[in-house]
Amino acid sequence: MSIVPEAERPNPYSAYGAHGSVLVLNSGSSSLKYQLVNPVGGEAIAAGTVERIGEPSGIVTHTFAGNRTRRELEVPDHGEALRLALGMFDEIGPRLADAGIYAVGHRVVHGGAEFSGPVVVDDAIIDRIEALVPLAPLHNPANVQGIRVARELLGDVPHVAVFDTAFFQGLPPAAYTYAIDREVATEHGVRRYGFHGTSHQYVAGKVARVLGRRVQDLNTIVLHLGNGASASAVRGGVPVDTSMGLTPLEGLVMGTRSGDVDPGVLFHLARNAGLGVDELDTLLNKRSGVLGLSGVNDFRELRSLIDAGDEDAQLAFDVYIHRLRKYVGAYAALLGRVDVIAFTAGVGENDVDVRAAVCADLEGLGIAVDPERNAQRGGERIVSPDWAQTLVMVIPTMEELAIARQCVEAVDHLEPPRAVTAG
Ligand code: ADP
Image 1: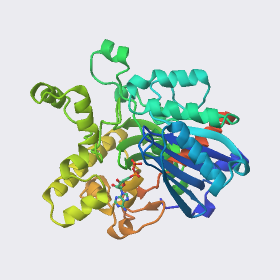
Image 2: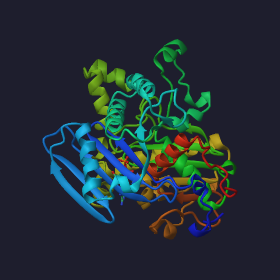
Image 3: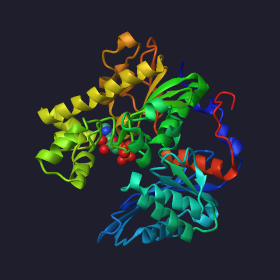
Image 4: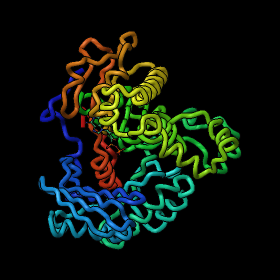
């Protein structure tokens, strides 16, 4: 299999017709990220962030036509954040009236067991997203707030909620069920939901598209390695398993999150270190992972420390890789045949050493990385040698674009294009 040049790839999204642009919003607890996207061509027309919402000095950045504007000013709440962002469009461009916004897409972290695809937002949908707050107390409140504010300020276009969990609603029960008391689990919604679904779905589809194959014919392991990190096994476009669970804490070692630990660690620390629930939450979510082991969470800094002989940094890297290799092995067993391992997100796309270490000494499984190919930079690419049975690929994720396309599908009731070469 080889890469089909971009110009020769059919664009199944051209069937969308002329739709103008989609404004994609990602509301975090103290930040708002936005991007104006062309859902057909795929390009980001403009993008920006409002950071430190609620703090005395907020930061607004806006990038349009290659120019980045940065402002420091107080941003008391999400309403003001969005007003400022809309002001940037007016002042710096492009003017939203000219860009013709077709829909506003909202990234929502937790869709529970209710949402398996994007939905056009109305009051009842907001209530349902709010009802899921107990499952995602750190994320869903900000998402709901972002939707409310955006509907007030941009009332004349449809708003669509796109859930991070939606793709993984396709997991089989054996993968999403925790082996704990069924009644307790059912009453409290305790099961695996998976996260980063938009990215995993996009990357699995993109792999097929760049290879000129149908997604239905490929078994792919997607490794989304950003600050948060997750793995998935995808058979024929349908998820078979993923590493994140009830919350985005399970699974891989991450920038600041522990990933898998024996749940007994929590009981032990509660009993012997006197840590309460919130302290344990902070420990595993914010003070663990690569940061907890090495003192840094950025892989560029980790590499500098390792090169300088820092043993803690080396151990952090080794633990990170060990966990990843366990998941690759487990997912190979679940899939039976692995056609592609796709690396994506900040670390996956950029860190040559991580890719090499994950795939080292796996020739017996038909998996290898070619050092020269792996060292090259660029967009979608194959980094495995020609003889390897499994293609190792780098696929830049484009979550905003994927959200924008799902918005168009939700508003127009379109089926997502899946038949890749035919479509
Ligand atoms: P998220 O969306 O989860 O915040 P990203 O996908 O943007 O994260 O990934 C951010 C991380 O990617 C950084 O913390 C850093 O560890 C890593 N990263 C970014 N650029 C590079 C690079 N050139 N080399 C190695 N790691 C990188």
